[in-house]
Image (tube, rainbow, N blue to C red):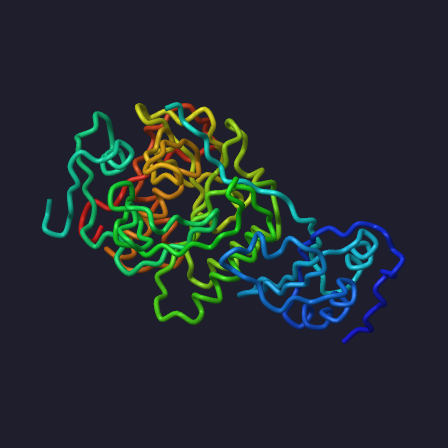
Length: 376
């Protein structure tokens, strides 16, 4: 172990602390530098309330180990003088100031025996079980409907007493793609949809812990949020997929900006989702595009479970992403689980090709299609 330098902080240092994500090259490097980080932070927090990560980490003086898989990192509050010194140490590969993210939602103005059919479904569901318009007034999907698949929703939380969830958090009897999945809420954002990169990483850390102790290895994460490019967040997403957990993310709503300029949309192992219109094959004016987008799904005027009302109509890539999350669950229950890389390839191969308009040649022209046979 190298000699650990003295923390540059003094009790008279009046510089404001800010939250940073510190990544290490290995578990041993993280362990060796823990004492220094503890000293710089003055206090240690050994546990976090994962039911409300955002509020639990509001105060200063916290070092939190958020390592999982081959992602080794701490989150803590440091002064700029600390950060300057930390970046010089062997074993630290990235020091990143925490950044704000947001949930990307736009308020709208107001039959085989192994397949199930829902008549008169919402238009977004009607659209994803067929290649072309016009809609046929049916939503056909595998009868397994995502059964025994766990879907982790990392955002503002779930209103579990809503009628839509039938007394428990499931993926929606009326609005959802896969009606039999189990939803698990991990609150990493405020009610207003504001989140920090570090809180999202803490949420991923929590999911990895739950996954490691669960007998059920059929898990999908939905991240309907976006922020500036973050190496830490992208590395965390890539690490959690290596554990076998599928990750679906929204491309972001920056009006045809390149999705590669945002995280977690630019994480290489994620399935990144753009949005199309509700009445045509055109991509929406708000969706991000580019080579980092894996596939497009309905994202305009999506009827959803409301918070203050029974229903709400929303638009955004945050609404498009859950369509693909549900489709991943359908594939797992219908065909069997796959590795995240193979699942991404499967979903893309299942997609309807080259029907979308309003995108350039750098953007994959893939439109979501749910499985349409029992073992597709």
